[in-house]
Image (cartoon, rainbow, N blue to C red; front, side, top):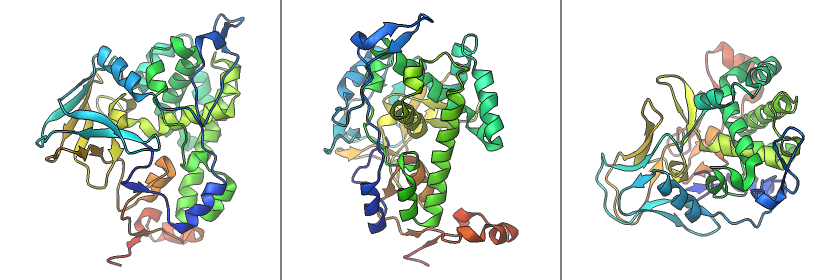
Length: 345
């Protein structure tokens, strides 16, 4: 869902400089032979390797999903245009209003379910309290934090994890704010730099909270910066948020393979039991990619900070008045209201 495609391009020429500084993350799930038993009778990762050459095993993931209840209409398929960039497409015409994918709740990761799963033996409350003490606004990110904890716990299990096929289907590099360095931020327009730094700062707070040691996660996992950044990026870039019956963040394997478009032809929804449905909102012709909206195309900066791409044809000029924040607040504006389109002014 988050890797760049023909519909998504990086920032303009100024971002070419980022290629010299990018801090992408690569991942290889630990094999069963690399796991030993710790003094706490938990799996200890002794040979965790991160390799940029790791290929995404998407077809094993799809077979795993089908075996566990994933359904799709005929014609909907995984596809790649090269560079290990995978998404979903249809080989048949599909009318609007068609449910084209169903992912049962037993496959869906839920931030609420994670509290129930780990609440009795994971000291989530202590860790989350430590997180909130670092920064008040981080309370809004607790559902994301819970997804991170779940992904780390599944990573620690290695090949014994139920979610191992899904984890091994992930992209190996990320280009969003979390993966940037200070040199990257210096290359960006001010508004883009601000939002990108906010993402990296949130990651740093999560990292510090987890490393306080309240959670019985393996130190070899939580102490590995590459693994931590990888797990955070997976949680950050693959969730969908719902507000009924409670506010929570959900990740649905297979549905998370659908890329963004400024003109989406499908939408992702969940019922009250966290079953996931992908439904077409426009007629889709054979040979077309499936797409959903991941954000406002008229304000693409949050898309760049979170996912690391800009929509093709983006004509928005970024706000450069970050240093005037007090005056902007006094006038009752937000930064995302200080943008204009190059084609309309």
